[in-house]
View 1 (cartoon, rainbow, N blue to C red):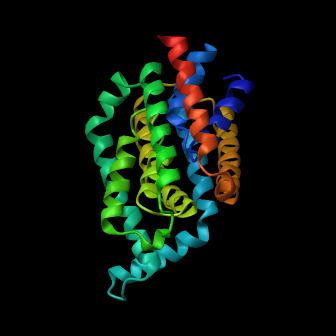
View 2: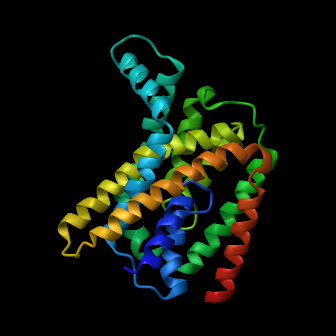
Length: 265
């Protein structure tokens, strides 16, 4: 891979994984729109490792507390707020895991077209706007209910459709259910950890079975760049979210979706 390809694709993955704009759509569209050769399975694994590293490092203290309290809940020491949050992340991952297991072939073969991406980009952009405008925004992620977990988990499963955006779908559902913007974003980011881990593991297994040549320089650089950009994205997104709201991302999704329709119809 050329250096410019590595830089662009790494930054795209790092920035879009956690913003409500769909990383999978952008990684599909960049080669389509630029005429570049597909980046390959090994590079996809590398940038997933980078984004996973970023979110785990950013929430390292919270994750440590959640793990300790979750262990305590399993061994009969009671259910604390962080233990409940850990259970929420684990249970909220199940719908996406099942959807990926049973529908991955349909998604990969039939739903990766620019027109599908254009449709979901616009549709879920409008849903994000509605949830942000009309959501009550009064509860934190520690006040999440079991019904909330189920609905957010289902929305994460739907986000396997390219263009939907995993973070966008889970934030939209969280906002619609009354979470504050930051609470919806934080829970979405925590919920991404097992999903990215599962996706990375699946891609790694495919890579082990393939005969694809590995460009280790590209992989190392891609991992580093995607990790740095993802970390900065999480930090500034949470810092600026209450000031800017979701409108900039809604507008971006609408513009992108309309452009794709104009280009590919």
